[in-house]
Amino acid sequence: MKASDKGYKIAIVGLGYVGLPLFCLFSKHYACIGLDKDKIRINYLNEAIDYRECEKRRNIRQALQRSTLTSSYSDLRGCNIFIVCVPTGTDAQNQPDLTPLKNVCKSLSNILKEGDIVIFESTVFPGATEEICVPILEEGSSMKINKGFTVGYSPERINIGDKTHRIVSIPKIISASKEDTLSLIYDIYSTVLEASVVKASSIKVAEAAKMYENVQRDVLIGLANEYADFCKSEGISIKEVTECASTKWNFANINPGLVGGHCIGVDTYYLLQRAKNKNQQMSLVQSARKINEEESSKIAHRIKDYALSINAKTILLLGLSYKENTPDCRNTKVADVYNKLKTDFSVVDCLDPIVNKEEILRKYKISIFPSVEDLTKKYDLVIKMVNHNVFEKIKFGGSKIKDLNDFL
Image (cartoon, rainbow, N blue to C red; front, side, top):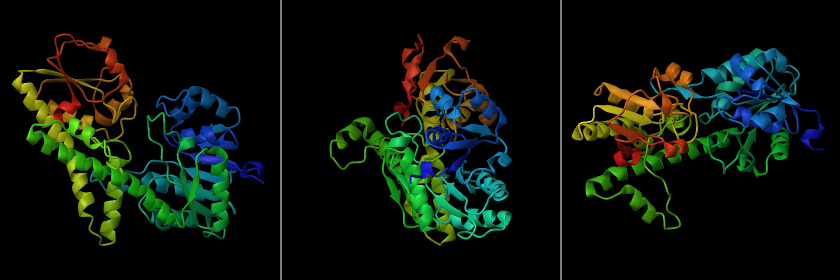
């Protein structure tokens, strides 16, 4: 029998960029309950409105024909598989902050039953599931791992804004605390995915694989940023150099730039902290992270120098999300550039029709213009910081127009 024939009821905890697409996907085959602590978000989603643009409206509507949404853990008591998709970030000192994950474990521990399975998709350092999450589940449920309940780990691989690499077509890594649980997890993911499902030999291997994916990219972008500085000193274009080098089949086509978002610029700190606890030196990783963290200051300084050279007194930045064509503004480094420029120029504004204006104000204390019609002045210098498609149709007559790439 397939897992979908066995009456499993699945709870998806956390309905963001990972959880909501999973909720819609699993709802095609299973009765699901999606939980998010944000009651306002739940109200919107019940109307098939997703202001974060994680999922298409028609997919949410289809999911709600079979599944339900809630903000209360008590509503999950009838579920037997729990998939946890909450964010794992860092604090002000760039130290791993697992508070959201710990809170979910505490809440789930109060409703866990014998035979239940908890699958974690949140990105964590190797060892976190078994050393941090499992003890919380054991204490609250008064059960022991592999005797009362079991756990799995299957790292998310969603690339936000990517229309080609979709959740159903990305190979899925899975792991579990018991072999029969691993087989079940394989069955349920195989039911909903078109891509292959890859079994890792242990939870720690799966955790380390996800960490390696993101840290590798952080290191390669750090190299690109450093090499871009070298090319600038030689008076040549890093863009052209990269295009030429990319004609070799095994060259990694990575461009320089700001490293924001919730993965690459965050997960490296998880690895570095874990390595420190293990007395392991990771000089290359640490150096790349330092290069990427300093990129926003370097770009702001170059923009300042250019603005002064053309006697520009008013600046408009286009785009505040961390990458193009997405409203996701988590850990966006454009905000850092904005704040640094504000110390030197009396007028620095930002236009972004895609991001949520209220969210930007709440997170970064930055007031943005949501449309070009809202602009109240002309600007001496306009810089496209994020390459949203919507900006291609906007004209700024009389302003000097530059691109972020001009300052890399």
